[in-house]
Structures are given as C-alpha cells and as structure tokens.
Length: 430
Image 1: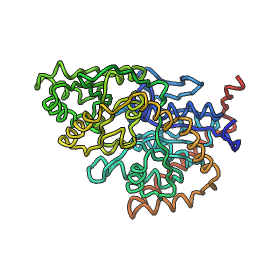
Image 2: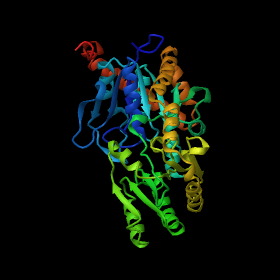
Image 3: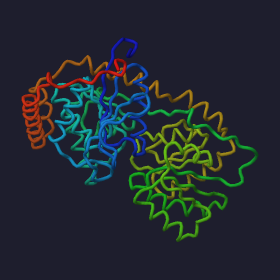
Image 4: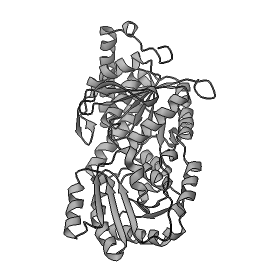
C-alpha cells in the first residue's frame, strides 16, 4: 500500500473550506483525498462545523471528517483562536497517528493555526495556496503578513499554477525552490457534453460561481447588459448565491432582462453538469482565482471559456482571456461567439480527459509528501531563527507566539500524556 516506493502517509487535511460548503477548494480537498485513499494512504479532514453538522462524519471511501465545533464568523472562516485550537488538533493528530499535516488556502484561519501547531509538535507540513491576492489593499496586507508567518517555518508548499507560485513567493517570501506546482484536475466522467444538432440559434453563456466580490460578481453587473445590447441572440444562465446576488437581480430588473438572464440560485455540485450542458460559453469573472476548477468542468462539458487572466488554465484554442475590465470582457465574449462554430464539444471533452486527472495530482502530491517525510526535523532554535528573520518587529512577535505555543504544548503533554491517549484503528482492522 502507498506509493511506488512503499511509503504510506497518514495525512490530515485542514481548511475552513470543505463540504457541505461548495467551491473549488472544497472539491480539490475531497477529490485529492479520495485518490490518496485509493493509493493506500490514510487521510483525515479537519474543518469547522457547518450548522448542525458537528463531530465526526464519514464520506465516500471511508474519508473521515472532523467537524470541529468552531462557528464561522466571516466568509466561512473561523475566528482566530491561536492556542485554543491546539488541544483539539493535538488530540486528532495523536489519535489518528498523523505524520503529515496538509493545510489548504491562505484565507483559512484554521489552516494557519494547524500549520503552527503541527510544526510545534514536530510534524512536517505541506501548504497549498489556491488563490491570488494583491499587495496594496488592507485585506491583502493583512493576509500576506499572516502567510509570511505561516510559511516562515514551512519547507514544502504547493501552488496550483505557475502564476500562483510567483504570487505566493512574492507575498510570503518563501524560497521558490520550496514551492511545487501541481495543477487542479476534473473528473471528466461526471461532466459529459450534450450532442449538438444543427446551427446554434441562441447562444447561452453560463456562469456558475459564488456571487461575491472576489469572484467578480460586480464585474458581471457591468458586462451582462452590454453583451445583451450588442448581441440580441445571447442569453445568460447564472448559478450560484451570495451577497452580490441582489445586485445582479437589480441589474436584470433595471435593463428588463428577465427573459434573457436566468438566475438559478445555489446549485449543488451534483447538478452543475446539468447546468453547464445547457450553455455554449462559460464565463469566469474571478478576480483572485489561481486555477479555477469550474473552468475545467465547463471545458469537459464542451463549453468554450471566457475568463479573466487570473483564471486561464486551458490551451489557447479552448479559452479567451481578458483583463478584468468590463470593456475587455465584453470584447472577449464577442471573440468567443465568433469561435463557437469551430468548437467540437466531444473533442474538447476527450482532450480534457487526457490532460487532467485527479489520480495524477495525487501521485505528484505523494512526491511532495515523500520530500517532507525525508526532511530532517527542526529544533526550536532553528524555528525561532526562521521566524526572527521575518522583520524587526514582526520577527520578534512571531517568535513570542511560537514560544507560547510550545509552552502550551508542554502543558498539554503533562496534563494528558500521549501514551495515555487511545489511537484510532484503521478501517482494515475493523
């Protein structure tokens, strides 16, 4: 069991973003975990509770989920607790005999805390960044400093594209040689194109996304009326929900586009394929996406994609890129309309099947895990030296946090020695 070298890893995936929430990070963690399980590794997921979904649950393939009873307070993120998470995560790590902690998404509070606590416990960690962030606005400055703190002691990171790698290196200061590029993938069996007969009379543009600022919902408000004005034979289908949905509905009322803009609301992931096959063009307006899985799903269904440049992950003949400006996006949609007659949905699906595979992502992730497992362990002095180099003031603050975390761990080891904690038997033993 395990990879071709016989190594078997016990992996704890940690993020604030997981099912039943819907999104690219959630799909990535689930699909990667399922493939790692198939390859003989043990995988456990830790996230915060979602409504009444709290405690331990199991998903397909025996994937075990710890829904920690922390409530989200902003955009599905938990309130930073620093050391209060350590007892819970320590219990999970010890009971599940975890060897590698894999954190996902720079915006996840739980991810940053898990990285800190895992390193304090002497475990190797791997971090995957899924989004692009800026450098000038207040939110990005805060996020980049948190990322610098987390990655100061991380020796293995993964980015989902080369653009994402460059962005992460610049934001965090992590050495480029520590960052691996492993793209996302798509289960093409779930996203099959619908046969098209004859010429296209009405062109349908599909949007499936959370309707929030960073997904470019405000950009859609400007783009859709202009496209409808320039191209009378174009309709829109919008799947998704969020705080910006009101703006889109107001836009539809203002421009009398009720017959041409269909608002579906929240779409379960199992139903996304049935929405995509109704369209001809997929529109991605995201402002921060490093590697949009929805683009892969749309291409697998045979849709030509129009995307902001932050989300371009397909060959040039399968996607039209534009800067996230209304005029440029409208122009890109016009180019896509001209290209539509040359698109063969089935051929596009076949190409996606050959290009992207979650099993291939899992194999490449195993390589990173093997690197992490072979890395010599760091002592507290080495860790403090890395944190101290983060800046004249930030470095001292980071060192103080790490020292306090170490003291809390010593207290927990005294109160509840790990030798007295029960370990969880593997499913093969049950």
